[in-house]
Every structure is written in structure tokens, then in C-alpha cells.
Length: 156
Image 1 (cartoon, helix red, strand yellow):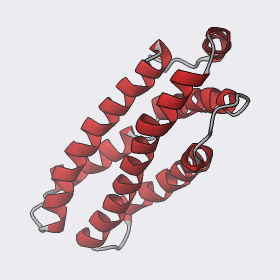
Image 2 (tube, rainbow, N blue to C red):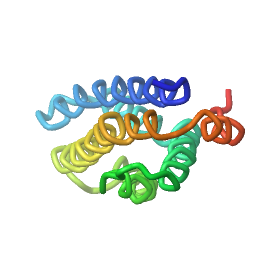
Image 3 (cartoon, rainbow, N blue to C red):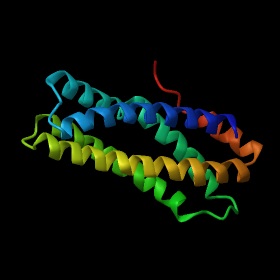
């Protein structure tokens, strides 16, 4: 796997670990066993999914995706959906921020966040098992160099 794809894959692993932590807290929230500290931690984890690193990660994936679309690769429909997914996640992130101070019940909040995490995992699965292998196979060394020149690194 190309080094830049490995970097994206590593980010996915980090995000998956965060989502797994959230799932534990969502279980507490659904079971009414979630105290104020758990709730605060849940929303802090949720917020961490939508920062600069996420934005730059999606920008980098888009660099690869757009260049892949210029090749003769047999592009799977899910690869075409990635840009729309990224835009949708940005919109959803804004909506999720409002949940913390909403009038929804804990169970309703948990359901909304669980729906988001299921969609996020489906998106990751498409990237890892369809998009990344296609890009790795079809992009040339010169195309990877072009991508690398535009690559966005997260701010420290």
C-alpha cells in the first residue's frame, strides 16, 4: 500500500478507537447510567471527530479520489459517493454539536449518534476495501508525486 494511503489508514484506526470509546458511553446513555462526566466525555469525543485533522484527512482523500477518476480504473459507485459523504459528515457534525444542549432524551441522543457512527463505519469500510485498493493499483508514481505536493498535514 502506498505510504500516503497508509497515513489515511492510520487515521481511520485512530478514529475507530474514538468511536469505540463513544459506543461504550452510548450504552450507558441508553441505559440511563450515564452521569454528567460520561456525557461530557461523550460530547468531547464527538467534537474530536470534527476538527482540523478530519478536514485535512478528507481533503487528502479528495486529492486521491479526483486523480483516480482521471485514470481508466473501473470506478466503483461507492468511490463516487465519497465526496458526498464528506460533505454530509460536515453538515452532520454541526447538527451533532446541538445535541448536547437539546431537549432530546438521553436515549434519543444516543440513537442519533449511533446512526452517525454506523454511517461513518460504512464510509470507512468503502474507503478501506474499495477506494484505497483501487488508488493503490491504478495511480502511477508521478500521480502520487502530484498528490504529495498538495498533501495537507494536520496542524500540531
